[in-house]
Amino acid sequence: MIDVTNLSKRYGETLAVDALTFHIQPGKVTGFLGPNGAGKSTTMRTIIGLDRPSTGTIMIAGRRYADRRAPLTEVGALLEAKAVHPGRSAYDHLLFLARSNGIPRRRVSEVLALVGLESVARKRTGTFSMGMGQRLGIAAALLGDPATLLFDEPVNGLDPEGIIWVRTLLRSLAAEGRTVFVSSHLMAEMALTADHLIVIGKGRLIADTTIPGFLARASAREVVVRTPQPDLLRSVLLTRGATVTSVPDGALHVTGMEAAQVGHAAADAGAVLYELTPQQASLEEAFMELTKDSVAFHGGTLPHQAAPEAAPESVPMDAVPMKLEV
Image 1: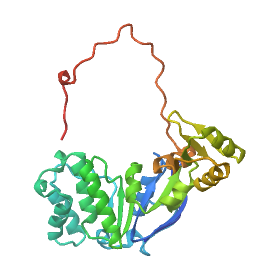
Image 2: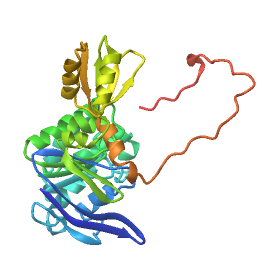
Image 3: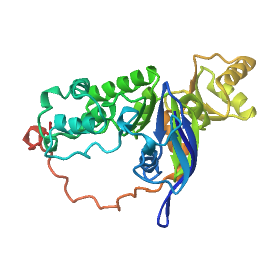
Image 4: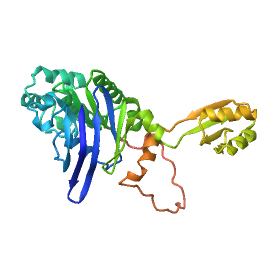
């Protein structure tokens, strides 16, 4: 259990976190979402005592992180995977952490095997790829077999197999009754992983809800309808207050009415239906809509450039030198 109450964090004139209150329950994966600059990393850092709150309190299972004598045995965190001495091996890095918290040496080998780094355990971490660094960070978080776990962007740099592995790991940890709090910018992956969502923007709480509850708040919902009598159905739906858009493939996209209401309207009008499919916003679409006023950094567009006088000749792909990183 993580209890965050009235948390604020100010850096000079910048208010990074603004009166946040939420509670993370054990036994489920809680996703932490927000645009860049929303205050997610700051919030996670304050939870484990790396930053001191300006106001508010944070309790983990009823106690502050700083009050624990062997914190790694109770709280594990991956906040910055590359926060490792590059000249130290993966094994020695974990062994140092283990000794500092009274964790048995055998646990180092266990977590290295769990994250798939056995074969490179004695290699210097400075030679690790981003994905290998992420796996080492996960190993460090799991080292003390803690009941509470925080992960900030845990799938960065991982290949598809690694992403699926992390997803399965997080869900299995929650199934064991642990508290799992994870931030990510990959909405499709979060939709598959999280049971609950905490969404913030500009340091303020936007949503504390389940994924279905979050999706229900998005207005981008419509019903796709196919009928051999589109003009008849369109007319009936318009009179009942719906918005109807025809698309090139012949379907009608209806907003402002639920699927059941569309079906009843079609029945009343005697219109035959070939399709009646409710469409709901994806997690990404819902996130974009509900955080659009909280985005701190907006990308621009390239200035218009005149087309070249002559298009360059195409170059075969096999003639282009490529650098592959493993």
